[in-house]
Length: 308
Image 1 (cartoon, rainbow, N blue to C red):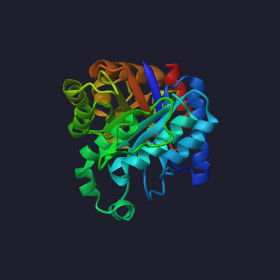
Image 2 (image 1 turned 135 degrees about the vertical axis):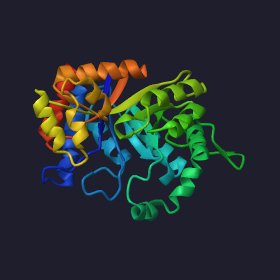
Image 3 (image 1 turned 120 degrees about the vertical axis):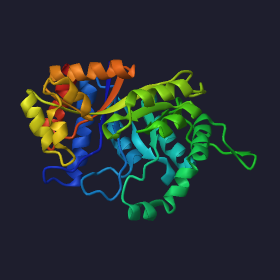
Image 4 (image 1 turned 180 degrees about the vertical axis):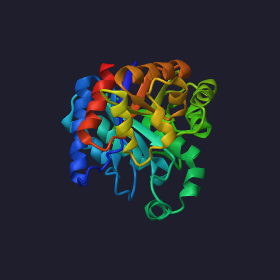
């Protein structure tokens, strides 16, 4: 089973954004040393508790501080941007860090209505145009894009293109990924949809492409792992998004664990839940976000998870 890291780059514990970014580097380096496959960062705007507004900028820094782990966006919010600019930015990263770069894209606004308007104007119209925008991005990554009959190249062209992934929480995003032949990341920790059904819909509708000849799937999951179940539940309960219903997860009670979006508990309990999810979804790769309001204990959660 492959494990990867999804970092929202939280600003916690009374620290500032600069310290949060230092902790992002530390997490990436720790993940690399532990054998995690990927380290991805998410894009958010005007959120005091999150420090990453520009994944490509942070990834350039993370790449220079690591050696082997794949680095990527989870997600870069494509409706905000020109496909050419996105392709150029990630081609540049792929030249700096050959064979290590992932381009995960999403279609969420990543912030409030007003910051969304300030960033890109009519966001809903750009979401409506996403199938065409995604097609243009793929052509730019493959070097086949033309405008008015003239070729346009996203330079600098890298020795190996970034891996392209579509992130989402429902059948709509799965259908985009399947139609265009991209990899698909199901955001289980944010979704109320049946993950098995969404992933099956992607598999069934997948169209082989120059990107991938067969479906590729990752599930994004929330995990809080600690030495004991009680400690894990306590750490989880300190997160603002936690609910009373979730607090039973990881207690060894299977129905409660299945009802929760998060996997919470001691290593052996989290391992059991993770294996069950892998069997249910028919996949072998998970990208993990850990919502713990303490940087050291967040690192420890990732250590315990990979050890389990």
